[in-house]
Image (cartoon, rainbow, N blue to C red; front, side):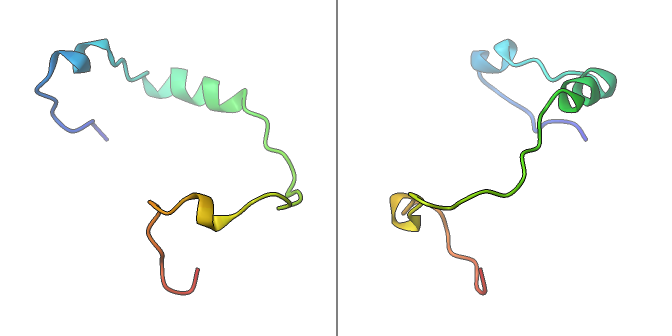
Length: 54
């Protein structure tokens, strides 16, 4: 999948890695087990849209 076209000079600074590099970087991520939701408040994110049933 290729990125959408960009018409600003800021795009020149963005470098999308190739598939092999991206896969290697993803392999380095640690996936933590589900934890506590203590302290989370949906109200802190009013800009998030609400999806029915979520």
